[in-house]
Length: 508
Image (cartoon, rainbow, N blue to C red; front, side, top):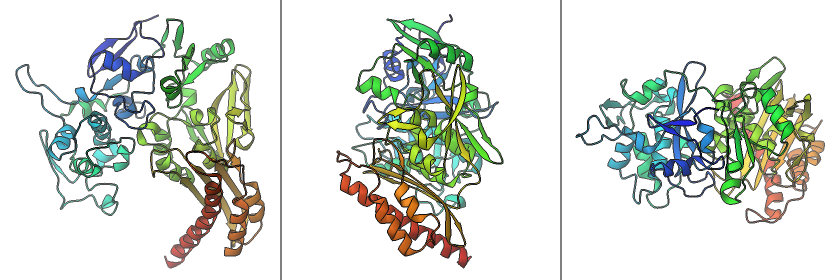
């Protein structure tokens, strides 16, 4: 047993005696750090955002923004956190605290009214401010101390035509998980686009040149609830064999909601997010293997567009705050029929490697789901790896139908992967979410398409078949009729987009 402690804003704070079900946000506020706010308690509004030092390779770290309202505080044992209070600096006792460049721009450009959401926005903006790729690309702005002047005359050419990426390389999608209901987003965007590069003496920038803290073997029991971070897979499997009902904690983007909204109190939580065998990504000659505990942001960064279908999925999956914590293992492990990763991975013909104390087995994802939130996973088993066979299909797309463009739950989600040979469809996989009790393959549409020429008539026939797939229901997100209609429309849209792509290729 060791003393549980977290470094917050450079100060080590003890966590002994903290209940394993206490969220990071609640613990921070109990420590007097009330800048982080609780808005939705579901990871949707971003008012609770903080920065965490996460690994960036073996010898560097990067400041990563996460929702503090979802993960347990004990999951950060031995880790480093920065809250909005820790961004500014106080050079000497009698000198007024200096604002961080992000805070200064938000203040100067009117990016805050009531201020409730502002600390969360500031933390998400700071993560983007320090993003190594943005810093390395150059901002086109000048920085003097903590004063930043935007140079509109010197935009970054790479992003000059991207209306959601500023002339300083600031990716506006980094704020997709932060909501504001009174300020209006234009001044917040203006503040983001005015940021220059961090100064070389910036301590938070310099911190990224050192490794992130290693995972700590945390083990504690408080008020009958246990929290354990296993050091090895063998220890994990042994604990699961003894306690098959234990909850696995990676990003806690699902479990955190259960604790906050449904008042679930797991008697045992096993943290698996830093177990190295679950964090490997390999690209072989015939297979891509993705560790179940890698965050979606880490997967996106490492694949770097090598799987176009996933490259389309990632920006539409919840928000950057959520993707910084969520994993394929967690999204598939819940068995939810509206998890966005399942339709995309079904289209990619993915399989899951399930592991336990008794060994491993490989299950096609199309055979993994057995009922509403039910799967073939046995007690004591975990998802170790997601496998995607190579080569990839030539034509792929991911479509998400939701009430909001980002940071929303799907009404319908569709993944399509099609291989053509001289215009004939030689392979077709279509994954659907939100139209049945489980994610499913669109078998009727696939049967219509396979072996046919990819023509408007065949696309229309497949659209009609697709509209009859599944057993969609009426709920507050969409009616069953709307869902069925969208299935058919997506197939027609896919045809139009593939023809447009062909035209562009010919013109080149």
